[in-house]
Length: 340
Figure 1 (tube, rainbow, N blue to C red):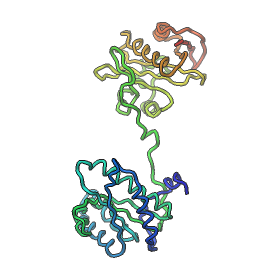
Figure 2 (cartoon, rainbow, N blue to C red):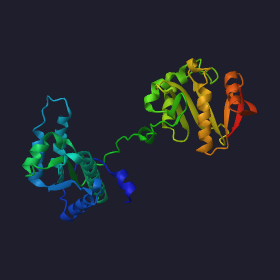
Figure 3 (cartoon, rainbow, N blue to C red):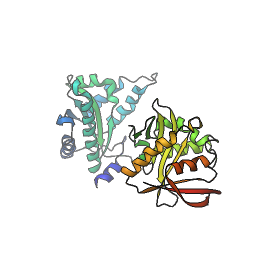
Figure 4 (cartoon, helix red, strand yellow):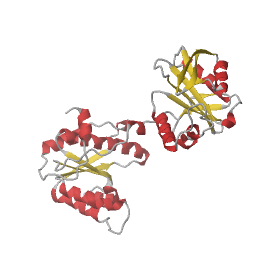
């Protein structure tokens, strides 16, 4: 099985067959953990292999923190203890404590644990990465004779007696972050990629009927939210919020494929209270310069309704040349070309 399929087929297994895991297999699991990368090559992990009654004693210790009246995460220790008793093999993962390296070492140990869990899949085994040991970590470390080490996690391992369906995963768009740093600056404004933190402040650009007079009218809240989520997640276009130096969001400038699917189009919308003050011209000049120097575009289009006189004047002020008029969305549109 190739690595991608191993990753895709890994599951958190909570029910195991009673089949014993032989020494050679255990050795292969440990070897894959041993070879893991670590911050500054510190290799801060220690692994203890437990079976039988000693393994079950760990589960019994974990149960000492369980009380039916508790309404917190500690109660999940009971479920994890049951898994440990059911599994034929348990790895305890310890850390050699060095507070100066605590964060780096924990990240390294997490990577090492994942190595073991993936090798388990490769060997036809299942595993469960267990963190519920945290509630009794000192007791467990004492019980196995290593009170000077910190117990980080445990891994239950064995032949699966279940085939769980994949758990839900966030989409790529939900986990992919764009740079938060300022994209462009002008004398009065900062332009940056639209971010989730901008969500509420972007709503008026889609729901305000005045702002959208020449954009097909206002959208419902649900449609607006969908559009905002789309531009935040979009990795093909450029969607820039325009903010004053005090952080007030006043506009949105976008570079996206034009309807002709050949050229790029620049579009813009600003809050009414910032109209006729030169903000759009100031910011669009900066974005057009970026298109010329960084995107290496030779030209870009502006499409606006013929009735939108202010937008047409702005396109002409930016040296846009009217190239075409056509009907789109039941309205006459003017298409300007700006040579860069």
